[in-house]
Length: 185
Image (cartoon, rainbow, N blue to C red):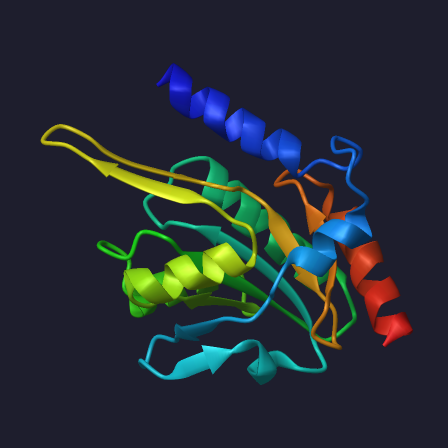
């Protein structure tokens, strides 16, 4: 348990502004925000499906009791508080238990502007790698643990990454960034 807490804390610190010597623009330039995942009906979904909208995207899993609900609720608050066209995407890294339909139902539970995507382990792993997200699923006879990077990615209407937020970033800060991204578009 201590290792999980330390790992999550380290991942959260890595996503906080000012915690890295690398300039944000350099980090964003390294990220490939493309993905090819599946929706609840099994249809392929890519970033191109959301062109012209702000996209808030996170990776998580539906059986998470604390971190993922907090992230999804924060995204939903930001979407609800913004008058800009935007969508929240929750991508499950728990491909064994979370089908795209389960992930969609989970995401929609936080708001109408939330959607859930999933796919095969390979599809999700590629999308996660493109975003610089790590995840590990550890299974034993008595335990099933999922660990993942708890960041919220803001992709502007132009399809380029605007910012990466810590899971507990105030929704007002995310709204301000969405408004700026839309104004710059």
